[in-house]
Amino acid sequence: MNGTVLVRAPSSRLAEGIVTHIRRTAVDVARARAQHAAYAGALAACGWMIAQVPAAEDCPDSVFIEDTVVVCEDLAVLARPGAPARRAEVAGVATIARSMGLRTAAIQEPGTLDGGDVLQAGHTVYAGRGGRTNSAGIRQLRALLAPLGRTVIAVPLSGVLHLKSAVTALPDGTFLLLPQLVPAGLFPAVRPVDEESGCHVVPLGADRVLIAASAPRTAELLDDLGFTPVVADISEFEKLEGCVTCLSVLVPGQ
Figure 1: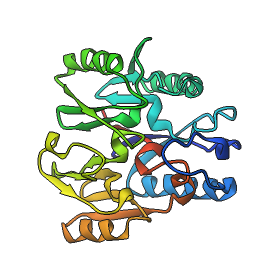
Figure 2: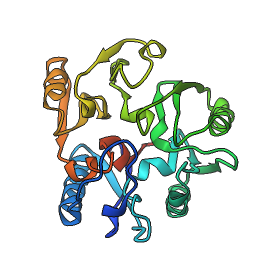
Figure 3: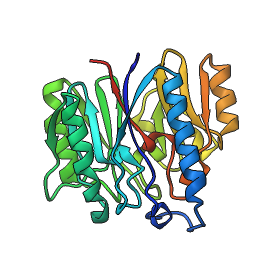
């Protein structure tokens, strides 16, 4: 078993979720729930234990659980989402994190931090400074992770919701990235991609890499590089600027 993965079922109000950089289109909640179940099933098939955080029916965006917490070793940093309407999502995740034996620390006002803006790559942590995460939040994250030997590098963002909407890391230490959305020079060993959803991946252990079905060319590239793409259809969540990273929080085995 690789560890535990936190997921949260979609709210019946999912279609009311926040849209920032794309035009709103209709969301099929029943289809989204089926896609979410298949997504969790793919993680389980790769050796991850699924921990279901209680649903938050009054929080339309609560399925995007990554934004509520950043887990580094045995520390769960409880986020303070940049969208005030999303702050009620954090309490339920905090309860589960503590039940798993994780230490918790919280981002405090005036700081804001969305977990989707935090990309961990070894002992380097990249933090996106954009619409949802501010400089005070990044300073607090830096102070919380320094005792764990992590270096936090701030990355300026524009035109994209979260850092991990523009760049993620592969198991070999290279980065899949959309150059027009994020400064490529801040990352070592960049692999530019031409599909927006192709820069959203989740390493699942060994050579397996989770990727959205909407990025077939990037999945083919990963296969050619010797990785095993694990493809998930998340089209209903993509209508709300969601990606494969934001639907789960991986907690590797301690």
